[in-house]
Length: 420
Image (cartoon, rainbow, N blue to C red; front, top):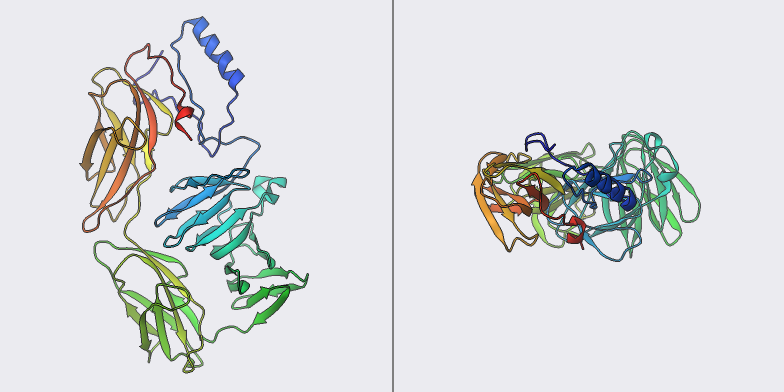
């Protein structure tokens, strides 16, 4: 017997992939028909995980865009906050964007723009509770906070093992090779030549074309903001306080730019103290460092991100969910609350491109109850975060669900066919 919407949701298993058993589903359906039960179609969709696979990373934040290419495919897919990638998948953060990923053991990756990495499959040989996750950085920049098990990062020039809770930065440039900078904890690295290096806080290792060089630590230590700190424009741009330690008095000027090479500088300022206030005018990734009187680098490069606002994540109904609601009964939609949002806009459509919108409403709450006049069928919904000054910052990932109005529903539709 079917239950009411508040407690009768038919929800497919959640995860990253689904490898549903067609024959088992067929037997179950046949048994239900023979017993006279109503027929339900529990769709198979990409958001389930097979017991033989492990989730490698989940997306925690995307400023603009990020993509993944599943293993053994040639097609790039859009990534959304809350999505995950499997071992063997390639992940790309395009120019102008920034993304944050989290491993199951707590390891965090801050991935800068124009970066590409592949999730290694080596940790599949171990128990999940003991897995040391590994990735191969093809190009770009990573800032890592290793979790409880540490982390392994490789490139064509070197491989590194990060100790638990360590902080480090990894760069791969096709012309300059690979660079590993340790901010906290310890890292064991092996270069292409086979030579091993033990690095601790403030140590820097560069490797290129089979040759490795351990560089001296910069005399100036950046203190605030933390590397890859994310700030939100809410409701107005606020001053960011930059601080550093310069015991040898080597710093002469402060540089702030929108590019890592500091070719397009926003500020080039003489400094007399160990702090400076900077008010960003627009969203984006900002780079800063101190230089000496000869204009040579006196500090590492600091990075912080200014984001217009975040995109909500839909919580209810879930992807592929079946809802039973009698005629005239409304549906409650829920999503994550965004502190910087003045209100939200929800859209309900018959198609995933949202060309056939049937409902479009605004609300100040992270939920809304609507749809008592909706007919039975398949729908897509999404929610956008509205900033007081910036307008709609972007919509959440479209979620498909099926609304059932009567005990005997229409003929089932394979939701999987909606995916490309």
